[in-house]
Length: 265
Image (cartoon, rainbow, N blue to C red; front, side, top):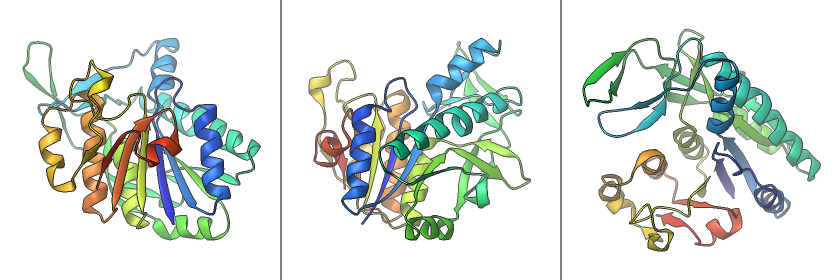
């Protein structure tokens, strides 16, 4: 059984519980691939280096990072440097033979750079951004991942893809995880975040929606806010790619896999 786990980049999401449970899943015989984000550390590094983080709101409400030529190396430093190596070291400490990869390694993740990005300004007007190094994944080198899994390694992937012209590109971690899960024909994609799952009322954790059918997912995407909309888009792409089940939740991987969050299938 192959399990793909996306761990969000918010503060405190990579917890002792998550690390211990990842090690337990692997010890129990599951083939696990981990992807991670890096939003919180990237924001911190941007501030320290005098390059404040900028977020983009697309016309359809998606929120993403504006990754210009000055932000790109900071993002790469955060996700492929500190976060990836620290996560690998923490898993190694728990007996997991983890191996760290960025999507540029071995052409693991190849993406198409977005020629232009549309963003809404504060007054609701659209603006066109051209100096943006973000992309949409087109190819996953699943053969490389299978070789590593067969050899007993646990791949830990930073969401930094290779563009068609050899440039580094920031790619959305949830959608990258969906692409990896689909390419490996994973049984489950688990997205670990800082909220319990999809909430009917984002301000009320008791309004958790526990199950969604794949057919009804598009209806829920209309009112999902902020980053949750991207997670649902990742879930939709995983399901369309043949992954039977996507789980979204927080705090405990095993609890989320056992229905504590939102399950989509």
